[in-house]
Image 1 (cartoon, protein in one colour):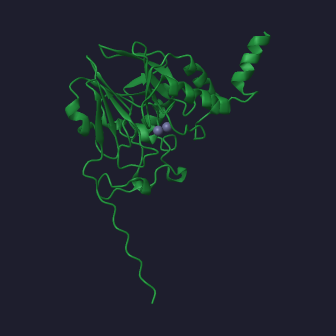
Image 2: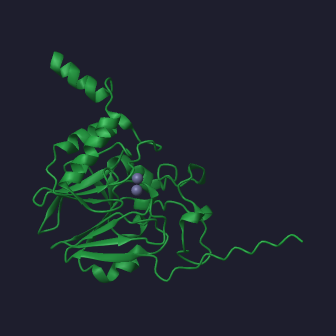
Image 3: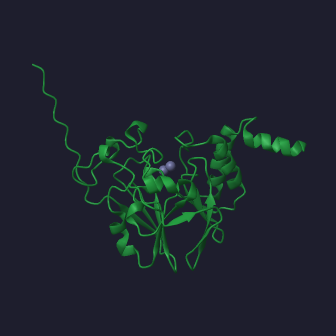
Length: 268
Ligand SMILES: [Zn+2]
Ligand SMILES: [Zn+2]
């Protein structure tokens, strides 16, 4: 007699969606541990003298604002390193919200396509949620909440926290509005999805390999001691240069625009 398959056990609801690691008195790392590790973003809370910065806001499926409330005692600026759903999902919750000019309209309109969360793009999958952020959660309802940015970031802007300051670097390639925040005193780079120690994604909707190559050529010249990336682990100067060099060796074929520029400059 054929056996009836056992019913699938329901996915449980999480007790707490987020997790925090205190790196120092001035730096906290918040993550979403019940979400698939490959896409799980690092959300960095930087405590300053005059204001605090939150770099990236996660998926937006549970209240990050409530979760970090006890850590916030100054004005807070929430920054999306870029528009992708794993970084900009929670932006709508915050009073002050910043993104690069190139992706401001996508945040304003809640552009699911640019955020990579249209179901047919295949990035937001039910099986990636190992427990549910709340009862009844399904990925079919998932969307980027449109919200007007209160601050538009551009290359060279300085974010002054009182005791330290960050320069905004516009570093497109992975997406058109990718930024990193650079502290030139400490030589620390909060790099979003521009550079991390894992598979770099340059074939997404709106990615552009020659632009990514130019971004990495620029980063090769930047003095960096520590990288706090948008995914995976923190790393230092040596690994930083290895990642840049390996990518450039793989992608910078003779004839690509950056090479041609150099050849033209040499022959001029
Ligand atoms: Zn991304
Ligand atoms: Zn990402």
